[in-house]
Image 1 (cartoon, rainbow, N blue to C red):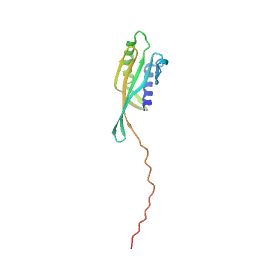
Image 2: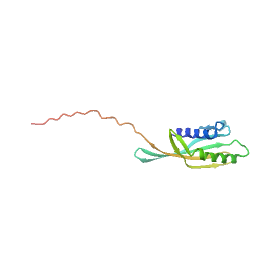
Image 3: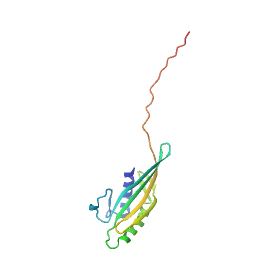
Image 4: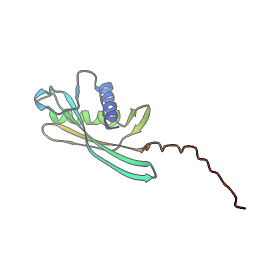
Amino acid sequence: MINAIIESISISLNAEFGDRYKIHREANRQDLEEPCFFIQCINLAEKLFFWKRYYRQNQFCIQYFPEDEFHKNQECCAVAERLFSCLEYIDVGGDTVMATDMRYEADEEILRFFVNYDLFVYKVGEPVPVMGEASEEISVKG
């Protein structure tokens, strides 16, 4: 499920920003060419809701590495505004998932955009083997 959400985030980012902005899933700071994004799941929580239904909270951090050397803060703020709109709804496996708790932090180097995609999951257990046929003989005394 996490990889499907990351893939959906990548598709939304690509649709909003285009192919010029590279999108990474694995952190390797030496190979990053600005401008680019790095997506990671930073927190996952799951609570039993009812029987086999669970409420799963998925928190993601999308890091943006700006291109402009002299106006990094302005570029990060502009990108953050676009992230609020393009990540509000994503399509995960044919289902629309709404973002919650969106916020960002910008420092001198990068933008960190935090977003939750909380959803219900239904866990299907292993099938119980079907009972075979049973036969019984009854006899009466006397």
